[in-house]
Each structure stands twice: as C-alpha cells, then as structure tokens.
Length: 287
Length: 269
Image 1 (cartoon, rainbow over the protein chains, first blue to last red):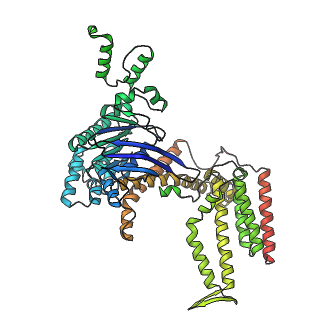
Image 2 (image 1 turned 120 degrees about the vertical axis):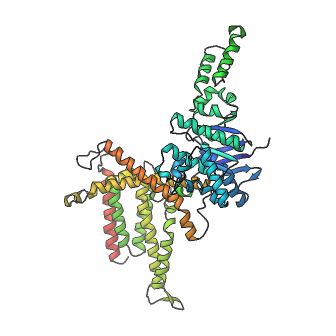
Image 3 (image 1 turned 135 degrees about the horizontal axis):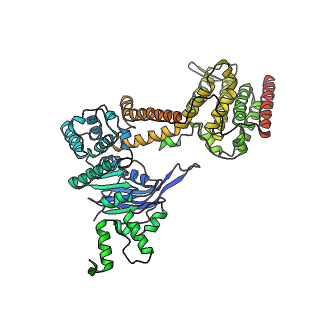
C-alpha cells in the first residue's frame, strides 16, 4: 500500500551554528498509511514532537523530504498550505490556544481559514462539536467559562472541523481524569471510523496506545529504533525500558516470567492475549 | 523558530574570569565603561576603549561572533545615527554638496565615532548580560541600590519584579512559539497580507498569550505565598555576594581607564 504521508532521511537541527545546537531528528524514515491508526511513543525530548511538526509543514526539514500523497510538501507554497489543512495537528494542552468569544467561533477558525462558505463552515463546526461530545447550548458560551476537559474538547474540535485526512494528536489525554481519557480516546476512534482517516496518536502511556493502535513507532534520540504491531514492539521490553519507556503492566509480568525461565510469549498486552498465552503454555488439558 | 534565535540579553553559561566576577563589580565596571566611552573623543582614546572591550570579550570566552550578532537588532538605529550625523554636522571642509545636503569632513568623522561608540556601548552591555545570569544581575542591582531603601525606594520589590520579568522572558517566548504553531496548524497566516490584516492575525496569538501570562502570574503568586514570601525584610540569600581580589583588580582597572580616558579626552586625543 502507498503511504499517505512519509519522511525520507528527515533531519532537523535546532539553533544551528550556536552553542545551543541540537539535532532533534537524525535521518528519520517514517511513514503512515491511509486509514491507519498509528501510535508514536517516545519520552520527553526524544524528537517525537519535532517529527510530528514536520508532518504538517510547521517545521522545515534541515535536510531530507516530507511527502504527503507523494508530493514534496515544500516543493510549492500551494502544496504546503494544502498539507496544513489536510494534516490536522492537535498540540499538547491545546486548550491554551483558544481565543475567540464563543466556542462556535473558535471551532470555525480553521474552516474559515480554509475559505469555505458559511453553510459548509456551519455543518463542519456542528459535526466536529458532535464528535467531541459538546452540546449545542455550549457552542454559544465563551471557551474561557468551560472546564479544563471541555476546553480541550473544543480545541480538538477546532482541528477536526477542518476534516483532515490525517489527524495527529500530541498527548491528547495528558492531565485528564480516567473518565476524560476514555471519552477522548473514544471520540478519536469515532472520527477514525467515520472518516476513514489516518490517526497518529503520540503518547508515552503504553497502556493507552497499546489499546488503540494498529501499529507503533518508537522514537528515541532522534531515531526510530523499532516499529511494528504493538506485540512486535513490546517484544523489546528491556530496550524500551532503557529508553525510559515502560511497557504495559501485563507485558512486564510476562517479561518477568520469561526471565524466570517460563517459556511464554513476552509480547502480550491484553487480558485475552495473556489468557491465550498461558493456556498455550499449560496445554489444552489444563482448562 | 526564529523567535528562539533572539540573543538580546541572553545568558551564556561559562566559567571564565569574567563570569566569576561579582555581579556588582560587573555592573560598576559597565557604568564606568559607558562613562569612559562618552569621554573618549579621538582615535587614541577610542583605541584604548576598543582594547578594553576586546580584552574583556577575550577573557569572557564568549565567542565574538555571538557578541556581534547581538548588534543586529540595533543596526537600524546605527544607520540612522550615521546618516543624520553625516548630513547635519556643520563644518568647513566640504566634501560633497547636492541639493540641500552638504557632506563635511567633520560630519563624516563625527558619524564614524558615533557609530563606533554605539556599537561598543551595546557590545559592552551585552557582555554583561552574556556573562551574568539574570538572577545574579538583579541581586547585584538590589545590593548596589540598597542605600536607596533609606529614602523609601522599594528596592527589593523592584529587584524581585525585575528578576521575575527576566525569568519569564524565555518562558513567554516559548509559549508564543507554541501558540503560533498551534494557530498555524489551523491555517492562521502571520506573514502575509496588509498591515491591518497582519495586526488582526495577531489576535489569535495575543489572546491566549495574555490569558496564559495572567494564569502564570496568579500561580506564581500563590506559590510564593505558600512558601511564606513576604517581601525583602529579614530575607537571607542562598548566594552571598562577596568581593574578591579579582573584583578589586577589575574595579581599579576600569576606574583607571575611565580617569585616563577622561584626561586624555580633555586634551583632545
């Protein structure tokens, strides 16, 4: 399958030529496929935020290219602009970007910048608000009156309203209570299914990504040491821990069992997989 | 990322002789240096000042390139000063004349010295901020202005306000960068359009920035109160300021230079 977005030998250096020079990304080859739910994991400062900001043309590569639908996004200003709209990026703590008088106006900021007509803007704002679970009467409120969790929904709706083909979310659940985490992850899943969009979820919570994604990419020190299905990535439990990333609790139990000499598959991360692995180990007769 | 490259008043961590000097010494030396710079008025005295500046930069181990980069933002002022001086200095040696403009030898000389003076003034003060952390700088200022407390000048409060302001400049720059990126991701355009359009485009940046600045101020005030901050009275310091031999040497040197340049300048050298 053709990737919808990919980077080739992408390198980014901050403050080049000063004592603060820092290479955040080093020859990274990354890709995401249409309709895929992809997870990016990496600890703070690993380069994951730099990577995602390249995907929607907010940062210009120091060297290397970024391709969106097979076109180099920096080859033509028109393509750069189109990429900004088709690759939606929700930043960490997006509630701090709200600025309008009403929730409705804030959500419509993106679609308005796209140059859509009134009717289309209205449809998009309402459908985005519906996706993130905002009620109609909240649309006319000031975003500054809402609670933290609701503000975040508004901000996410502001990006969803542009109906991007690729939706990137940087730690969308950081600082929310468990209920808030569940509902936001649910909203994202719904958007994924309804629009058949590519979702890129950046997180450092293994439990969170493991449950949602089809494929995982680990970022460390500006490079991608492993990628694959969650099970393939979690097989590298020890290396992940060295990078400062935990594996899900269940995976850790199975890694420990493995280290103790029990021959079980160490890559499991859900209860069902764990059950299957144990049953396989004990043999069918054990049930 | 252009915002991050602002060097104005940026601290360059290091451990050179200049870095280790007491911040009060450096403040006094900079004041003496500025005074001397205004007393200098001909090649010889400027050469002495240039030597002092070059020596200080060398001792500080700050790359000279970074010192000069700091001059970029004031280039405009320098150019305007030079142009005004060239055209508006009356003199007897006329070099060129057209329409209502007259260029005299005196004008060119004066413009030259003016430009050199401004550039040296700025490089010198930059060296102070490059080699002194903002906290030490305000500590030094508070200590130097201490006597003013007697006449009820709220020196401690001023110094605290200043150090908080300095402390939050990088934070606010980072925040601006982040909000700008977030709005750009929603299609905001900060670079093109007419002046009015551009001013309007700043709204999505300024509103969140102000909101967050107020939020931060509020949180900081609470945090300070929680730690029983109640002003300067009876407050002790983690870093005690103390003059050492190097400080006396530096003070003596700068005083000597200032007096020397003053005398020589008076003689017209």
